Image (cartoon, rainbow, N blue to C red):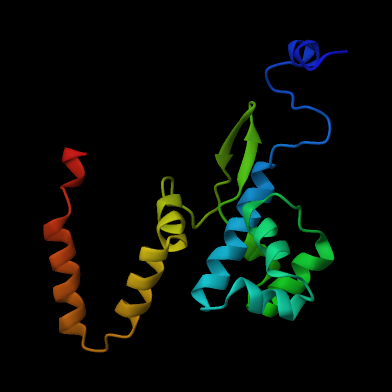
Length: 156
């Protein structure tokens, strides 16, 4: 069978044998691993050393390419100093074929942007630097400055 014929027989959602699309839950858990690692200021290499892994393996976990087994997730929780549940906070849930954040009592819709922001390098640096400012008046001035520079929520 030719490759063209094989591709024609695949459905639009199917991938060729041997390749797989990252599962949304694996991606979410990996994102939470990366978020916590970055909040601790830990490199992928250092996390890998604690777990007996290479930084490339850690990288694959964080991207959701490799699924994290239960025992490994338990190890990650210990090394990163969080409960296992941390990795599932704001996790997607299958509802009518779509993925939506699972809502708990404390979670509000649309708060995933906070996790997304804190997962970025700029968000992480801003958060760490802001946390080191001890004077509450200076902190308030910075919040006011950022608000003045950002567009109004109504104009978005």
